[in-house]
Image 1 (cartoon, each protein chain N blue to C red):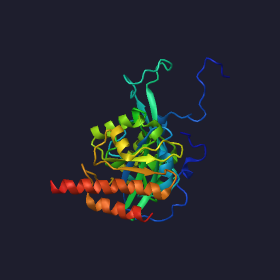
Image 2: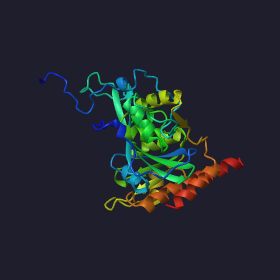
Image 3: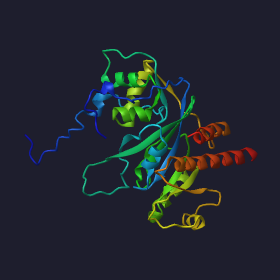
Image 4: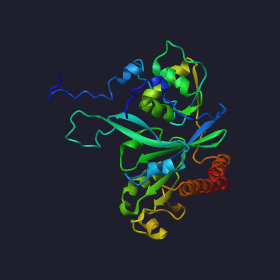
Length: 207
Length: 118
């Protein structure tokens, strides 16, 4: 992260002059996927602001996990997340966080999933193996998720049921295709997550 | 000045972060990435630049994640700055919508409605 060289007092958003009532609250969705799968593209496609980056430095996160003989004494690691926002209405702001799925560290950043509505697992069919650990972690944490296949033109096309089998997903987990560059397509992927969550909530009520 | 044996001076990271937070390292767990921060008082000249910047930018409520991004400071540094401001009642921290095991249907309906308008 670059440290601001200009006057820090001038930091802040530009052009967000729409007054929000102070009763507004935040809610979030996490977009998980491997490097280069299009998380930031997806965030940028639906966000009302250009994607921003927040980061956290974690101490000793890699102890016992990350053996890096080339970096003696280095026991901190930085995890960066790109995110965007969608003002749902005057009272509700939806934040979308894109997190790198192949890094073990981000699971250790407490609070990423705390209070999240759910997650979108973004899949590149050329590197499907990246998703296995992500999906296992989400299931362990009981974070509801949908799988969105980013349709890269040169990527192999698999029937949904083959993907479901390959990822060992239960029948109930929605799998959708999307184009991470396309606003409507990404919105539809988010909608599929919301509709899935509504189904889960309804099922919970009838238990 | 520098020789190869010395650590390279990092132009982008000259100030230890504990200087910015005033030495307190007790980042409160009460802040979530999407806790909204709303300014409750005007910045004054005696304030630390980072804190004054928070008061200025949060006249329009922003999430802690946004404050972190705009200040180019790590999340935990920002939460430390914010806990001081909350303590001094200069900003209000608005907790995220609580989400239990499953979110409330009313909340989901609102999000679905909002997304469809995009």
